[in-house]
Image (cartoon, rainbow, N blue to C red; front, side, top):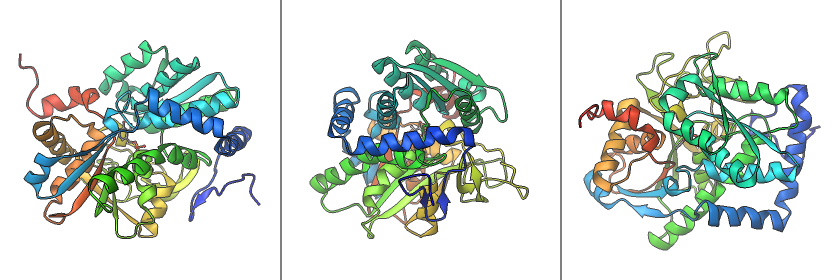
Length: 395
Ligand SMILES: Cc1ncc(COP(=O)(O)O)c(C=O)c1O
């Protein structure tokens, strides 16, 4: 017996391990999502905003110079060109419309890199909703331009000083705030958390893979040999992967943050030392110690710096349909540098992990046709990247 209408799990992963006080909200949210899916007017409004406001469809771009350099045929799905600079806006629009449908006037959100916070603040400005964004204090420091953007858009940004002062702590705080403010909608920014969030967030982003698949067929023909995307919580990757899952010949590769090395606390790679556990309301792979305590993480990219992964990815890995690899901080920086110099595109540090992995694996991938999800643009990361690439302080 389930309280919900939709399946709450992906294989053994997912579920709804939420405090009782949130159950009414989660059930209400699922009901609104199901009803919206059957309402052509909702679908039309969502499609209209994705097109006219967000700028969809985003292009599929053939990275010719980099392809030649690496000996791998590379195509990029340009979510960096979406309004506000990352894929996060797809989900923010979808969930904000659901919130309106439920009669909510206040939105709570967490953010890591700031992209989800900016996307949420943007949609709240558009729809006239109040917006409060929880952000780890360390991320407030390393993503300063996005903090200013959120404030300009009218959002209240609440720095979170607990724990490691990063994304996990921001999610904790946003969930705590929601328990105390059930009249608000919690606009969760990745394909994680208790049911129905992984299902809803994944479905808001499915447009990425749907477009990419049609564009690939028209431009390159057939399907790619491999589809590669970075994985924090997993929203951009699941959005890109879902439409390719039935195509068994397409290799699906998620790339997580390898950080500084494989020791505890040095990375955010859940497939290196992660174990099954429950975090933020879902059963999934979690970086935790023998006692089940969540371990510290490190990544150069705030958006990948999270100790658990969305349950659908845990399932894709367990069934062997997708593999999950890691790129280190340095490999991500090399991906960033190469795309900037060879294609004139500054990628987000998160997306740079997918690029960095392809650069490292170029011999194995030689001659293959690879689609990379370029989840966001890198302007927000310049303060971290410039000193690391030897450009700090020159006039
Ligand atoms: C540009 C960009 N890419 C990727 C991510 C990682 O999130 P997800 O795994 O949900 O796509 C983030 C998160 O902030 C981001 O800003």
